[in-house]
Length: 310
Image (cartoon, rainbow, N blue to C red; front, side):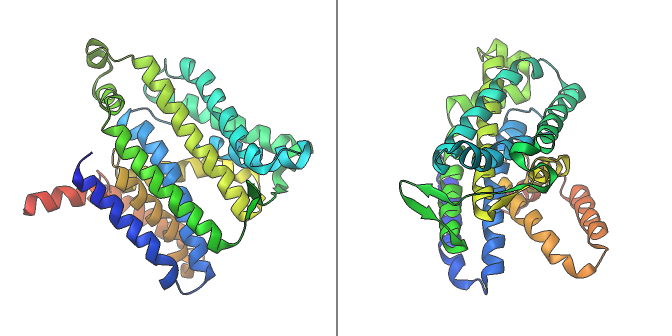
């Protein structure tokens, strides 16, 4: 791994370590937690989209599976909460592996529609199985218990999410600089060329899709436990588009772009709250402006400008 990659991780770790001591109140601490959760989900999604070149328009469905596994399994079946989180991640990974093979035989907009359909199916199931999920009204979620230690309160959740974010960035950087990561980039460039070079295209697609889905599932569980209540809206289509937009705004095929995109688009609705009814319009204008002037994303554009100046 390049030293510059390590440097970026160290800067983020330093910011995360100092942030709780400078935030003015619990509202901003909660916002920082949500930024971290979104950043980890987007890291996994960017590995799929940016490095492997595969689209997913239903990624919020995996977030919903993890969230409701952590709610349903302890509430209805008596599972320990940490076991439910792991069980949700395993189930999500198995489901992703089962659907990946037929889905990734498709290309272009056909692939996009297939992943969109998968997300919609998950959302419909969560809404209709009201006996277990509470339907559209949702259900409460028990506090997360890890080896007898109960995690509760924004102070504790902040450090959990901050540590997970640093680990996720480190793992993503190592992955993309590994032989597997080079195979993903070859796959993104040209499937035919990747096959000729000896890359098992089908296997690589399935593995990265499963990894990305499990990232989302675990963070869905974290979201559920942190909030203490969950509804099927966590798995709806607008949430999938929001996650995809974070990838694009921050920078496709950029690990740090994933973090920046998640931070910007999690904070933006709060910054526009004073527009009173016009916040959606302002949000759209800002996104369109970003796409016009920084089409490659914020981080890749800034990197290119910095290298050009030096």
